[in-house]
Image 1 (cartoon, rainbow, N blue to C red):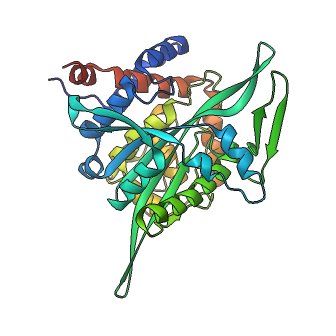
Image 2: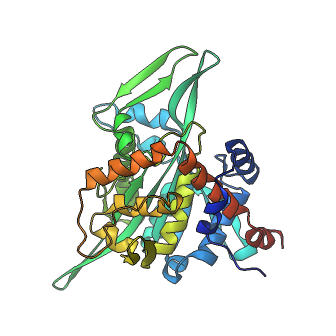
Amino acid sequence: MSLVKGLGYFVKDQKRSKFASIIEKATEMGAYTMDTETYTQHVLRLVQQHCFSKKMRNDAILLHAIVEMRHIMPQLAKPDGDASAYYEDIGCGVYSGDRGSLRHRYEYLNQNIVLAMIERRIIFVTFDIEDYGVEVVDNKNEYVGHSTCAVFVPRTMNSGQNEYDWYDCYYINSHGQDMNRQCEFDVIVSNRRLRTYPFSESIDVVFMKGYIKYLHQYSKAYTGKVTPITYDGSPEHTYLGTDLQAGDGHGVCFAYPLILWYYFGRYFASTRTIVTRTGHKVLSKGSTMLKNGHLGEFVELCFSDFCPSYELPQVGYKGKTYERAKAVDDFQTVIEKQNTLFIKRASGALISFLAQSFFKNIIES
């Protein structure tokens, strides 16, 4: 059997790719859909088995959730802000088994998260949001979907003879700092009318804070005690860096959580060596970067392969300091100047990686 080729192997072939071809292939593979049982979702579990570090092969779990915000956000806009009845109905796709014998199940997201927390696993959740925004198409209001993700990482602190366990939650929307402009949620009332719900912070942060509150309630009801989860919407827990989708008019947001799953599995528990103009640099483990509050830098490093002409300032360099805000803006300027090349490299390389014969042969055998 041939060896699996890494995602970075396919970057060089994307310059002449056409978005229409990328979208067509993504649709055929089930990447450009909100279904939880597809070729792509099957391959993502094979990626874990064949591309991840040993720790992440054993400890990580991938859950693919489908979300309808139009039921949740109006409840969160009320003074009591309780959307429990809708959070509890969020479903997710789960795979179990090994290699070609992977089996799909569709279950409740909250139950799978809490069960994984009991086992102290690292939990990666992709959120396919069916109604993140609204666009007018043929003079009619239509919901527009978006894909984001969250990572739940177990933590332990020893204090004398006592041990304290909790989880840190990290939320990632590929729009990064531009996510802060999305502080209103629209519900379609008719073909021409909307009802708008304003919030004091981004709808992503409001959604996640509400969901974490619900998970606290659910974990107590399910296990008899609350599993503490830290999430406060800050840059340490929310990706507020470069808008990695700057200039995207093709709707390839689906690619970003899947790319993050790949790099997260490879480098969360392992160091990474990159080539720079001044030589080889060894970056800190992703787990170290997140624990030290550098979520933004870790996410941007996951996408640095798709922008080889630009050398990111690396927080992973020992003793390296830089101005974070300037680094975020500089990287976004480079992406915007490249027009759609960065987005094409990222989405095209992902689809080619997932479609390679190594994975096809396993699934078809």
